[in-house]
Length: 121
Image 1 (tube, rainbow, N blue to C red):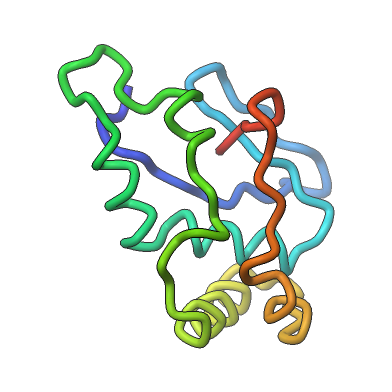
Image 2 (cartoon, rainbow, N blue to C red):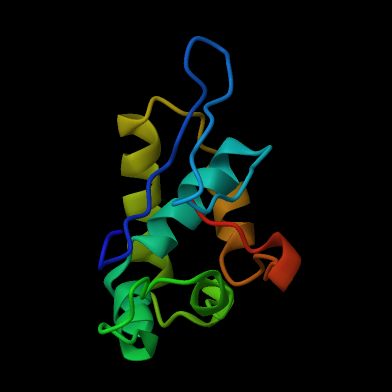
């Protein structure tokens, strides 16, 4: 088990879904702009600092579903323009469509998943 959170955008391979084992949590997305934005936020240093403030490193599995469900992406103290720029670059690197205006609308308005839906990748 990893002792640090690793967030990765997992795309279909040859048009087919990827299956992950039980050591992974995942969030499904229908919208590519939302997917790259959420990934950018989860990889941000602000999110990393938040997670590290809650982790018990001596635990067998320090990164838990319960811990991850506490992340509220709307409350991360990120710079909006910097996040949008990073997201746009990330989308280009992943060869994914990116709609700038949609990303601007999503910042601060992302749905916080319920505990039952809190599956991260």
